[in-house]
Image 1 (cartoon, helix red, strand yellow):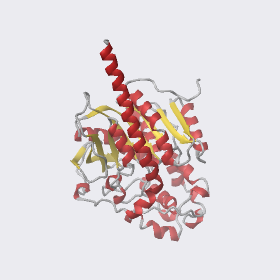
Image 2 (spheres, one colour; image 1 turned 30 degrees about the vertical axis):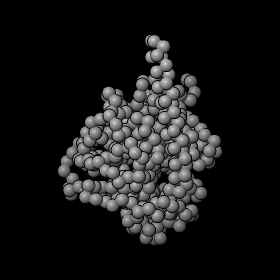
Image 3 (spheres, rainbow, N blue to C red; image 1 turned 135 degrees about the horizontal axis):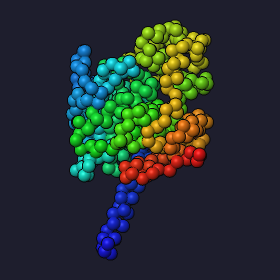
Image 4 (cartoon, helix red, strand yellow; image 1 turned 120 degrees about the vertical axis):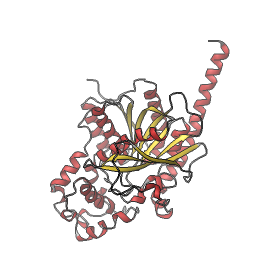
Length: 401
């Protein structure tokens, strides 16, 4: 290598690092501000309209999971210059194995794709309601626009599913990680059909409940043996669904109602009146009409019957949403706040993942606020992602056997 070539490569690395730092600073300042104001914004900013694009015939014409239904470029999002968005519809499967349509968004850099196509990030979003209009693709900022745009500006395509029933007119599966994980997995081949510039390799990333879905993707891939799947990231914490209902301090009006809705989605024969009180039933009927979340803390008996924990279908619902029962197909990256009260839960799940032989990089950050944890973890995230796409072995914080 000549001196000039060496200097050029060094300059290239400096420019790349500078670009990353600029993207990171812009993201952190945007995301931490947006995280604290997100609930208020949902109440003030109306969603984008549900257009005919999201409609499908009834019954839905048969299609294989991951088969594209249609796609279109869409310029109505609040995204920075240089990010191009495409909406797409594709075939997925319900918890009962029925053919359903799911919607989502593909974000790609507005420039020529590299040889082999854009490396892809499959995005799993946090819970945000069960009504059709709750789809992230109907929010002007896509729920996490600054973060998703940062990935794109660093040279990745983002494939963000809405999950079935958000956007499309099928029943949403609520917080069921298995259903949501299948939506994430099937979104990848559909996105490739819509955008031939996407490469074959991909990782999954999720926040909140989406973090559980991203880890479930890793567990499902253990049986699928997709050589192009490279691993999953969960941020800013990790918990089993049952953990959300362990103490009264975690109960809210929304969480109580979503429990009944989720069990009903997975087990259609379940009668919600078995666990909901009369006030709960009254609010339950309105769940499909709005995305406004009620975070008011409540006593469980306000909306849930005394013996709701012993309901056999509730117990099955919690059981199917436990992590660490199936080995992961690829390495995992888990980020959490060291000061979050849920760190004990995250520690327990990571320990279980390690116990079954998974490779887990577990990073803890001093900030409590979820938005700051996401921001503080970005550098570690990107190092992990880059290592996966170039075939390097990622670190593991699991004890050596």
